[in-house]
Image 1 (cartoon, rainbow over the protein chains, first blue to last red):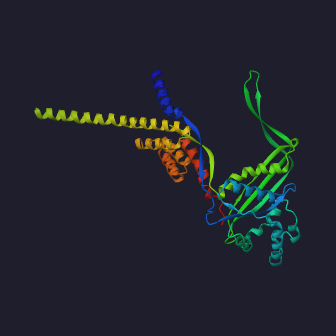
Image 2: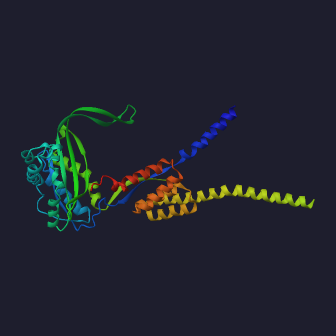
Image 3: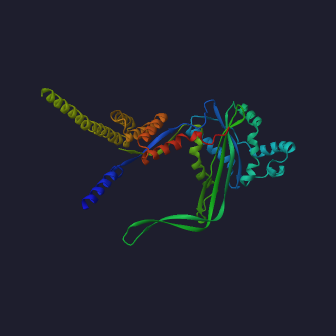
Length: 261
Length: 126
């Protein structure tokens, strides 16, 4: 009986041995990622401007145009058109809406005067998005800049104090000096910033949309930290930029893989 | 009688040959796997030092020696990925999974690979 149990245990040990013995090695690789968009037909890229909304502390249109131009200039081989100012897309959308209103009625139930105001919510931004479907407008702009690839879209940047629960990770040292990781839930007032950019890539030759990509990034700060809105905007934009750059240019992505014998 | 003796010798020869085949086949398989493992081990060492060209050569060599060794294909796929040979990497990962479909390490690497290189197929509105 004992011998039989011994044989069973030995068989089980033999079965378990291969999986238990696999040792692996974590390596970091830099894998080249091809751009999602074929940009070779375009000589140049125009970062035209954005429909921006949210808090007034940050001019999301201006800042987004600046940061995208600067990133594309330094981290891609594309030629960037340094147009003087970002297009005031909200105003253009308002002017175009007057035509739309006369012909089709008010877009999305918003009256013409509402479109002239600064958008503060996603719904208000959405009401102005008809500008991106205006093929003639984008085609004219493309012709003006030698059939460039046009980058535009919407940027919603909101922020303010909010009551919420956040998870807090801490490290505690016990009586014998061992360190332990603990996590707890904290409920209270926090300053929350939210960035929701939608990048729209338009073919300047035809005025049609080639590709759109949307993001949502959020940062929660302690109220006593007094994080300026502009600083939070850049922190959130930094998270989005690698993917944005990967859309139009070759990028090297650092990632890890497991080698094994 | 001599006919019986001849038949007995022939039977011994046949059984001897059969034993030789049975014994030598697993041995040569073990030898090939052992040699391939040596190549893979060296490949891992140089890959950890960033010498990916040498690592690629070692993993390819391991596959030549033992074409049924999943780890060699997995590691070769990683080396190809590092050098931008995306389609070769994909084939190597798929071969590794074909050989060892339940291997969680290969599956994890392949999933990460696809997450990066299949992005182009995501939301693409025209």
